[in-house]
Image (cartoon, rainbow, N blue to C red):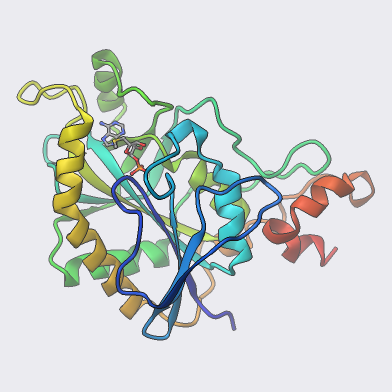
Amino acid sequence: MTRTILGIIGGSGIYDLPGLSHAEWQEVESPWGEPSDAVRVGMIDDLQVVFLPRHGRGHRYAPSDINYRANIDVMKRMGVTDLVSVSAVGSLKEELSPGTFVLVDQFIDRTFAREKSFFGKGCVAHVSLAHPVSPLLVEAIAAAARAQDIPHKQGGTYLAMEGPQFSMLAESHLYRQWGCDVIGMTNMPEAKLAREAEICYAGVAMVTDYDSWHEDHGAVDVATIVKTLHANRDKAQGLLLQLCKALPREHSPCPIGSDRALDFAIITAPEARDPALLARLDAVAGRVLNAS
Ligand SMILES: CSC[C@H]1O[C@H](OP(=O)(O)O)[C@H](O)[C@@H]1O
Ligand SMILES: Nc1ncnc2[nH]cnc12
């Protein structure tokens, strides 16, 4: 039996989590470098929650500068079983108006300047990523959104772009043709790394704008996004508190195996593995490496 520990990564505009009792900021070291910030650890009822502001307090890190590996490693070190990622996104569909929350379940990864794996030379692994989000967690988030009466869409494809500039008109049209629902700069490689770390992951994408494609809306700008984000913040916090209250205290095995993703993923023979890399993998892959 595994106790649920909920991790929350807050995106633009979400740099703290009110409502936590016994809360403290805790510095956690990672062999993968500097995480975005200390983590805010506390309780909601009897659920342990670990919160990390993705861009750091004061929004110090641009999407390409975030150390996604350190952030996920820190979550793993804190024992996080389930991770909710909250993000601001642009809408690529008319019906997804600003204020809508999209519970994304697929990604298209167009980022190119980020470290995307914990594994590599000296310990190669290939995890399955056909279904990048964990169904039990998404269902719990959807139930919380219904309970809070938050306009939301369950399911959607998130286009991850490198940034930091917003997309060009031709790109925005292209992503719409691809059938994407929302666009952002941060959920990749976060979701990939969560899977490698065997943490169940789900994304709440809060629509702040219509990106650049919509004829009735001007090109996206940060001022508009921040205004919508502030309007959305109470809703996001209500959603998270409701989720914390309702989430089962015992972590049920993930039906798609997110929490066992490394069972058959590591292909490097034990005698060919690099001890230095194995040492860095102690938290992320300790469950399987210590067993073999
Ligand atoms: C402030 S607008 C662009 C910025 O907002 C999103 O961040 P996050 O996903 O962390 O909420 C987007 O990806 C960009 O980083
Ligand atoms: N239009 C947009 N493109 C990329 N990231 C965003 N975050 C919020 N709105 C965005």
